Length: 450
Image (cartoon, rainbow, N blue to C red):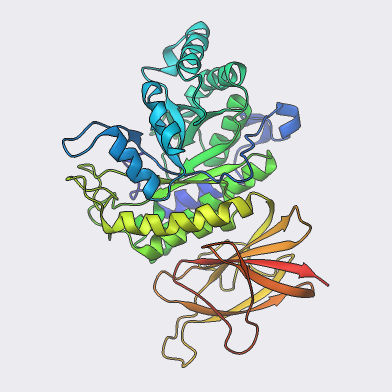
């Protein structure tokens, strides 16, 4: 999960990577541009409707400290509002069962690229057998941030998980687009492809995953989205991953930052936690991971400090996890149909309103005019399995609350917002006083037709 060249890439290279268009001819492509979910025989992970995974991206126990046991550590995870404990050894799964925490089984000592097909199959079979009888298991951790050269072996590991434990996840987390790409000067890059688009396409076509997971920490690296070049990378990743997920009918999970990864960046704030959460929900993400739970020599301001004490970050996470645990299961019933931004968009090349449901969003940070900044909004549009339209509006300012007024494409007889605390509806304020959204937060609207 650590990226060694995160902030040293040129903007021109970043913009080239995030574009779906490439300079290569079709004959040079290393993947089939016409592939579909059906032609690949993909089997997407289907989560229970009441389960939206929110988890600390960490291993438990990383190591037992004098101040804790595995039991107290996992109890703290549950108390923090996580419903999924991250990566657990098979012998420790009983504790997750007791706490009603889902878990991903960590497969140890597996160098997939050097293993034979028989060794891969045997390793997966052995781990599945070690994990039998534990209802908490939702899948098996395979690897983090693989290059494309590992895809053939990972495809065999994914197939083995499907074979020995059907319906469970083979967990692989991908690089973000700001990882290095192949070039004449760097033929052995992190992605091991010439573009991020090639990396994603080859991953789906060669590995045949059940879902897409990736990490992106640009909210931190961008100084809370004030560095627009780095902010653009966060949005580009979110939309490009979403696009591939939609194309291949796969869910996607986003791994975001809950600490300070670099000493030159500010510590996390409640607005940053909310921003990463609500932009993921608005884009249609189906899972949210937080890197990293324990303070590490390289990472400070984590939820748990070096003495095992809960920090302010832990409290922020507990609060925002409550929102995810409430809204996530609701959004499991919604199909993402589009993502748009108010004009001017917060960074270039983002899709502007109008959408198919929302025509325009007008906002202000100060009705008295004392704050000149006009907060931008992200708008995720959805259609529910109850037949109603939904929209998630996210205040993209990490500094100011925003009052908004909504203009819809269709005429609705009723628009309500759903509470992130209990999911109950409240009529949307449409008069001059408007509705307010806190910095980085979102609001989920349910819109019923005439």
